[in-house]
Image (spheres, rainbow, N blue to C red):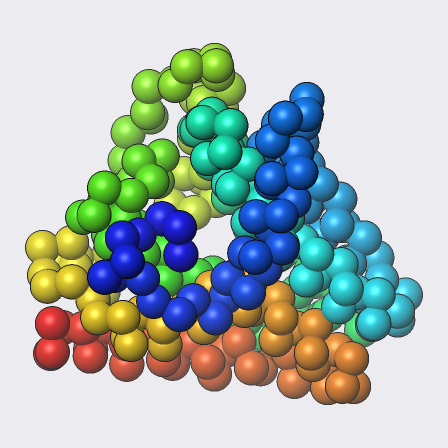
Length: 254
């Protein structure tokens, strides 16, 4: 966890691609490739994974889902190595993630017999899971001088950083609010005082990291190759029940 000081690092099970991501970033550091190029790479990988799901190539789908997770970490690593943080990259990354998540679950719906409304419930649950994890994680990073491009409350359009245009930031922030606004509000209403409470302990953050997108994609990949494609949609619905349990633990103990 390069974004946190040593005392507050936790085992992030969704961040398994970080070691390879660091290698990729190191290779690209002195090239013309930018973090945005890497973000485009993970978008392409996600699209290929969706196509593989639709056509029944589940091993290939698993590969590209995991590659997508690795590249998703590599763009941030490259931004840190090149010292080029940007709100453009931060919001482009998030907007791409939610759109890809939606179409990945639609692809799973297409190859199974579930009702579309059940699939939408799974998508809603999957996004709430990720939002809770990001909420607590960003609080930690803000408390300990971590990444400043991610904010606890995304309520105002940020001022563009050096090397990016305000117009691009405005557009991408608007898309972010449109796509994530409802999920952010739900999690904030469930635990509005988290930022003022005690630091979430490492063991609890590790448990909550199972809500991270990397781990979610890994679950989908594993279930596909094991032949349990019909389990994917109900899994994310039932697993969302842990949202209330994790929040209750934080409130009662911390």
